[in-house]
Length: 454
Image (cartoon, rainbow, N blue to C red):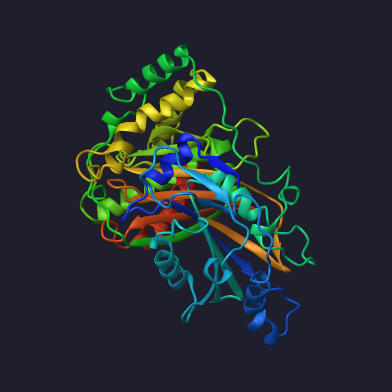
């Protein structure tokens, strides 16, 4: 029996697991039925696919990993391999009520997503969902954050789909490593321990986040809002997507990055949401911005991520000026991170957020002033078409997690010609979630008009 000790970042994701904070991440994929199907074949397509997948007996890393001890209370968790899956548990099938639109899909995904995973089983689930409008069905896959980060999880799930519309699909848990692009699902590199100079550099950078700074967004920049506070066990989920070409055109015109444009759109949507609630703070909301620390060509599975912190410009009415403000904020954050030696980045990440994460583990991180107001993450995707038994993948919506005090998360991933957003929130703290999804559309339209008029 092969035992695998979890790296520190992976272990932290397990240790943070709590009743109101399940630590899994997910991908919601929508597909269009193959046009060649008859009406009867379309009605049985998902059921037939589910039945065939449940007959698959092969299972590879990381789908075959189960905890040696099914508890969060362990310093160095380990996993072992299993080869006999209960596929009636891991693979499920649902049907949406009419009319099968985005609202009904969001309600179902919120319900599935809020359910914690069974730590005695391999830490993943797949859910087929039929009954969507516009000749579509969905596949929702959730995996515990202790096994994957956003980049490796997206690659693992989307990469398992076929690039050939005529080929039969193989379940993702049975995909041989060589089949998932560039070598497949590999175990994480344990890396090297940081040196004394790395520790000093990481410590010095983490101290900067605890002081007021005119250019750098720090924890002292974060205002109190009605959004931040204790979270409950229930979730809201909403989705939105934009044409990548629109965002790239804006970025090129303004000298910004696509990420900057994304932050300005999120800031615009949050500004209008809080104005409507008569609760807009004088200072701008801030966001944690996860960034990958993977080296070029690294395709391992696991968590390799650090954090920047940026301002969303919610206190700025003019959308063009808001974008300029966001640019300055992210530039300062990137400059600080880029100055760090490579092995000091993880030190900085652990020291900067360690006290907050420790308070969450101990159950005391629910109240008080928060380090940041929300999380905005952009996960790289791919442009090529993907298929599931001839059904074309339309959109991939990431469905992430929230933490005590930080009850709202925006995550986006690109696929084909679109950038797709998944928004997750605490049901009690963030009402009318769909208004944020619509507000992002309005914020992008307003930004485009403002830039074109200058």
